[in-house]
Each structure stands twice: as C-alpha cells, then as structure tokens.
Image 1 (cartoon, one colour):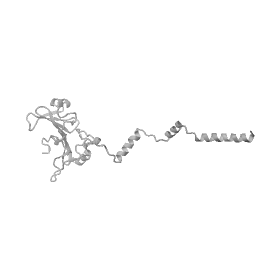
Image 2 (cartoon, helix red, strand yellow):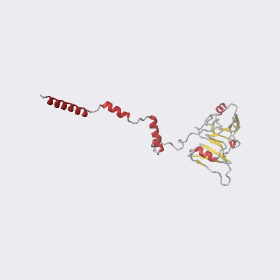
Image 3 (cartoon, rainbow, N blue to C red):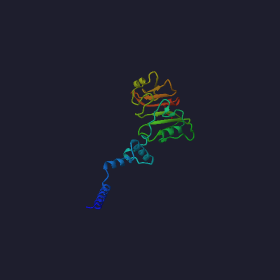
Image 4 (cartoon, rainbow, N blue to C red):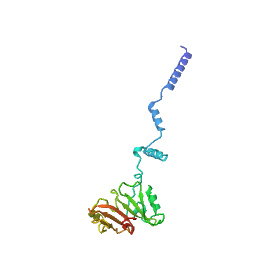
Length: 225
C-alpha cells in the first residue's frame, strides 16, 4: 500500500471518530445538575408570600373555612379603663370604629345627649350579650349577660358570691337588689381606677350579669330606662 493511500485511510478514521463524538448523548447527571442550577429557588417564605398575594388579589376562601362575621373580629377585652383600645369617655364614633362590626342603636333625635345603648349584631336569642352605654355622646359603660365573657379581674357569670369576694379581696361592697328579694349587687371599687364593676347576684347566690363603667352611669340600675 502506498504512503498516500495510508494517509487517506488515517484521515477517514479520524473523521469517523470525530462524527461519533458529536452524536454521543450528553451526560445525564451533568445536564440535570446544570438545569437545576437555573431553576428558581422556592421556600416556605416564598410560598407564604404567594398566598398573601393571592389574598390581596381577592382570592376566594373555601366555604368550609369562611369565618363568621363576628368571629372574624379581633377579640377585644373589657377592662376597668374601657373596651379594648377605647377608653371610657371616648365618643360613640370612636367606639364604632374600634368594633368594626355592626352596632345597632341611635341617639334620641329630640335629645341626642340622652342615654342609649349600642348593641353588637347579631344579638343572641336571649339577653343582649354585650351592650355599650352612651350618654352625653360618650362611651360610659359596658353591660354583659353572656356566660363566656370575663369581667375585669376574672369574674364570670355563674360564679357564686364567695368566689367574687375572693377574686376582689377588700374591694367589694355588698348592696341589696332594688327589685328582687334576696338578690344582691356586688360593687367592686378598684384601688387604681375611677371605674366600678357591678355583679348582679341572684337569690340563689349566682352571678347573672355584670357591668363596668364610670359613675354615676355604672350604678344605673335600670340602664337607660
């Protein structure tokens, strides 16, 4: 075989090897790693942000998780100072803004300074639940007859008189009920507040309702009647 023939064969062999290397499939692991390096990194914070964004865009809450209008409100506690962030002495409008739900009640058109109540809606089937007394255009008292509510200092409906005395040692004044024989008013006068807390106790010795507010309104036996 001549030298020129051998050179041609060598060139053909090199060309074949080059074509084979060009058609070989890429390494799978290396390709996967490279692709992963370019994928966006999602973490829990990102997922949470997307959930927040969805809500901001009017995302629909599934019916099973839609909160009741009243339970959607942030719970606000009654204290010797007032209701949640609203102190006794605030205006009726300030109280409405703090409640953020529907409050039923309006001042007398002929005497806007007269006493009236604001009632959260919907009202319970029995009693009024919680009621806010307004007089002179200002928030002056909270009346409660729902068993789950806790009075300032820990008193509750259903407690007996002895338990109230123990919760507020040295601060309780006992007065006879104005209308019900054997019933009592337990009037709590705290050392560090101008407000008073009044528990109405049945003849059987159990708390039936309570109210807290500033005098003299806190001592109105008939409410706004």
